[in-house]
Picture 1 (cartoon, rainbow, N blue to C red):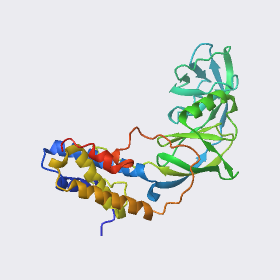
Picture 2: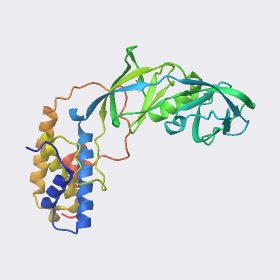
Picture 3: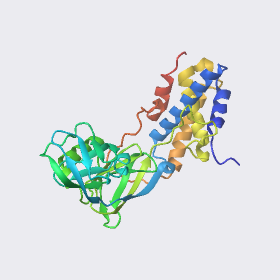
Picture 4: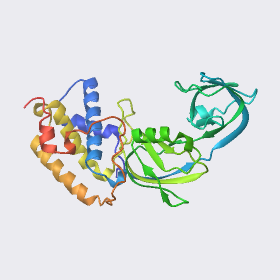
Length: 314
């Protein structure tokens, strides 16, 4: 018995459902139909197989007595000879804050021996600093998947909620409260699989998240043996959605199935599977987070009106 759905398997199904076309055109059309079908299905319901829980280890700050020199008007800094800055502060995007100015969180873009360069627009504005000290804070972490909707978020040991916010709200909050780095985090946002918390932690914490994730959509360059991010028990629903996407691209005259019957069957399957999904209804604590840029295909809101309007010929 099959337990997984592969890219090849659904492409072969597409080939059976569509009239003959060149190999390149077919691969392009079939891939797009599969991508749009997955996005649409994931957008029309919060499927329980796309719900995820993650625990993120938030790291304590790292203080350094290594001397660092800063020059007014420059974004280049130098550290004590032979004691350069750790490369992870660049690659993992830590916030570096000099003791001489707690309101400037530097993002390091270049480390070469004892020389360090901050991001564009982060010139040192205070008086020159000789033999200053600095602390590095980690406010950026990676999640196992890309959140679409947050259900709950809390600091585990403290059993305290931490509030999600939009990317713009986060950047504004961080800018206003930059001097609060080294405190208990109380805000976070996500960008794709990346998690950003603020204030940057003053000690180690565990952040527990319960969220609805985005479906993983295969790329045209992916291997055909790739396993599609959709459960085998809902394959029939995916196939119906793919048929409707093919119908929207190719039109009635270029598909090998009855459009009206396919649409009726899709609606029955969709409503039936949504009812059977038994997904716990938990009110999210924020609006949907924007993931990779895409707009749901027409079947998300009104399958009949949307998909039939996408025919290229009647």
